[in-house]
Length: 121
Length: 107
Image (cartoon, rainbow over all chains, first blue to last red; front, side):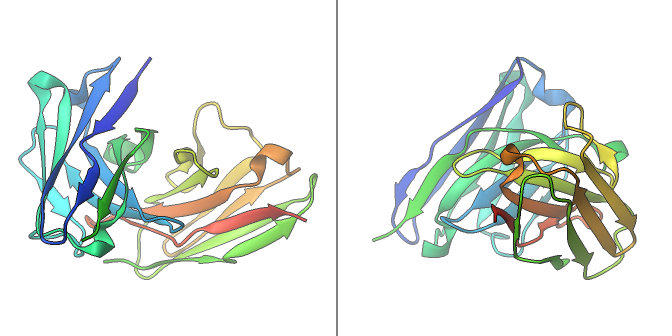
C-alpha cells in the first residue's frame, strides 16, 4: 500500500533550524512531483513548497521563501524540507503530499500523517 | 499569491440535505481547482480534482463545477460521515493556495 511518512518535527527556538523528511513506501517517489503543506493548530491548510520529479524546479510560498529549502533524493525514495530562521508563526503540522501532475491539475492524492513543528522560546 | 475565498465559512445542515459550498479565485485559474475533505485529527482527503472530476472511491453524492474564477462543491443526500471541513485549492499559479475552509456541522 502506498504511504508517506514524515519525520523530523519537534521543538525549535525562534531563529533555529529543523530538517523534515518524507519517506515513501509502496511506490516510487521519483515518478511524482511533491509538495509540503502545513496546518497551524486550529487553522486551515497552507501550501508551503513544491518540487518537480528531478528536483531541478522548486516553488515556495512567500511566507517561507528564502528560509525553507525543499529537496529530494529519489534513490532514497525521500523528500526533505530544510527550515531555517524559524519563527513562532511556523508552528504547525507539516504534511508531505503526492502531486498528480498537470494532467490531473496537481491534485494531492496521497498525504502523510504529518509531523508537528513547534517554534517557541 | 492567489486568494481563494470560500463561502460560507461554516454551515449547518441535516442528514439528507443538499448543500453547496462556493470558492472564488482572485484571478483566473481555468479548472485548476481541487476540493478536499478533512475530519478532526485526520489527514485531508482528495474529493474532486480539475473542478469536476470525482476522485476514485469518493461517493457520487459529491460533485464539483465551475471554471475560471467561480467554483462550487455540492453534496446531495448528506450522510453523517460528511460532516467535516472542506477546502478548495488552486494549482494554476505556481504558488498554490487553499481556501480558508468551510466547516459543515450537523444541525
